[in-house]
Length: 222
Ligand SMILES: Cc1cc2nc3c(=O)[nH]c(=O)nc-3n(C[C@H](O)[C@H](O)[C@H](O)COP(=O)(O)O)c2cc1C
Image 1 (cartoon, rainbow, N blue to C red):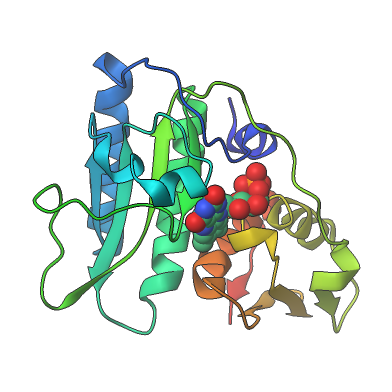
Image 2 (tube, rainbow, N blue to C red):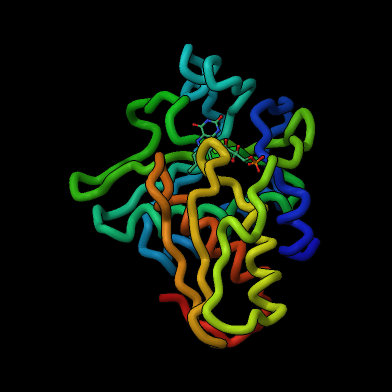
C-alpha cells in the first residue's frame, strides 16, 4: 500500500479486537518509532499490552473500546514541540495503516498510568495515539472545501492542488480543520494553524499529508 492509499484508507478507529500486535508487525512498528525518535529528537514511546490507560470513565466517555496499545508523544519543551508531534505521529499512523493496523489520535480521554512510560522533567507529554486491529475501518470525515483552507498569490500548479486535497483528509482535533495553506510563489508554501484546541499538532499532521500529496514537487515551507 502506497502512502497516498494509506491516507485514503485511514479513518479514526476507537474499538479494537483482541488481536495482539506481535511478530513482524510489532518489530516493524517499533523500528519506525525508533527511526522517528532519531530523526526528530522526540521522546516517542510505544506501549503494548497495557489496557489501563483506556479502561476508566474518561475512555468510555470518549467511546474507546478495548484499547490495549498506544503511542506516547512527548518531547523537550519547545515552541515547535506540538507541530513535531503531529508530523512524526502521523508518519507512524500512516505506517501503521500500511501494516494493517488502525489508530486514533487522543488528546484528552485517556489516563496516565504511572511507571508505564517516562516523561523527563524538561519534557512534556503532548498526547497519545491508540493503535490496534480495529473492529471496523472507521468512516470518512466531513470536510471543508479546498477554497476554505487554501489560498494562492500565483497560478496554482497541480502539486499544490493535490497537496491540499490530501491535507483535507488529515485527522484534526474535533475535525476542526483550522489551518491555512498559501502558495506564495511556485516554490514556497506558507502553512498556518488557526486558533483551536491542539491546532499546532493538527498543523504538523496536515504538513505531512500535504508533502505526500505534493509528491516530489520542489517547494519549501515558510
Ligand atoms: C490532535 C488530535 C486530537 C484528538 N483527540 C481526540 C480525543 O481526545 N478523542 C477522540 O475520540 N478523538 C480525538 N481525535 C480524533 C478526531 O476526532 C478525528 O481525527 C476527526 O474527527 C477526523 O476524523 P478521522 O480521523 O476519522 O478522519 C483527535 C485528533 C487529533 C488530530
